[in-house]
Length: 499
Image 1 (cartoon, rainbow, N blue to C red):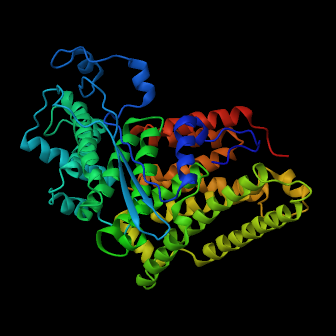
Image 2 (image 1 turned 90 degrees about the vertical axis):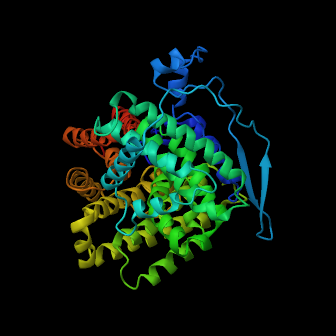
Image 3 (image 1 turned 180 degrees about the vertical axis):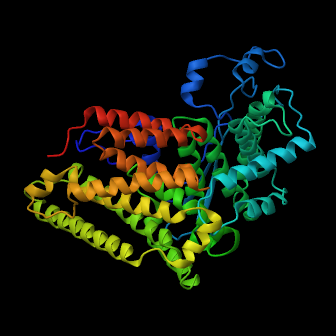
């Protein structure tokens, strides 16, 4: 994320340097490369180093019981599945040797009953009701339908139960389950889902019917990580190397209808937010995926909502930031290459003005009555849309603001906003994110992007207090918000008021 007004500001991405930099490298090396290595344990690396204890050898292991984690004698190395696309476009699957699961490791004595499984499914549905991401999909119906086919394993069902158990932990619920065992149940089903998913990935090319179950499982496991891991590392692992890479490997044609279309509609906003928060490329910017989105919009025959259209602009803004960063910090601007460098700089600025006009045109459309009607039952998506618009407007200005001397030295006019306009957008973000968090069933995860952008431009104490309070609300369910709070506290400590 573009940080404070100073160029040396800390971004959210810099909080996870080892994991994120490795992921970014994989993305740049080969856009058709799919390496997914989910860890059996949902614990973050920080937690593992903090405990630094092995199983005691007893059954159940006393150390693991005390730490409230799944008991395994040996941490297995994750399996790797590489899916590459050759020049002809044909997908080639190569298996990398990996350690297979040995005999069953000692487990905590859980043995959930049928009633407990029923209640865990109920809590999963509760999680979905409290974490709506769009008005067009019914996750519960799709996932339950896919769970019925368990020929390739129960990994999707296990992911559902793990998320349901973790939701029960967050609610401190006792109906139908034993609160003292709920966390262990969550870890148990998470680990079981990952093991089953590994086996399914080995048969990725042999069982295409399992594709949608694999996709949904990677998404649900990523959400589980966001509910348990304050670093965000686990979510990045599942989304970048799981969901996104699997979608790229399957191709946009797999998302044109049915389960594929509905899954893509659900996951798209998460990929958009990931790209803009970490200032990284996204497959959504590729021509074939943009074509898919245009086809989807055409089929809706005027029923497309404004947030859907805004996501396209956000992807373009994120892509522009990557171009600008590469131009300023990585391109060769010596005397020989100066004309080419100037041309690229003018192209970047011109694209910035085009996107600024796209935002103006988008705002002029207003919120259609159909969307307002839909919100009566699905939450205040107009508030989320307005918060995203304000954040994107500031973000686009930031593409140029933070290196403004560069553009001035080049004699290039930048499409940046005045400080008054930026502060107006900050106030709108604070207003609309409050509405989303306190008056809707929209997932709190979706306000992280606008709150981070607003935080980078908040000079006054009351603004910063409001942002901290909203992030604490998100943190109740998703500890990853703590990383955003820490990042902003650093930004504010280094911040100098605008001139």
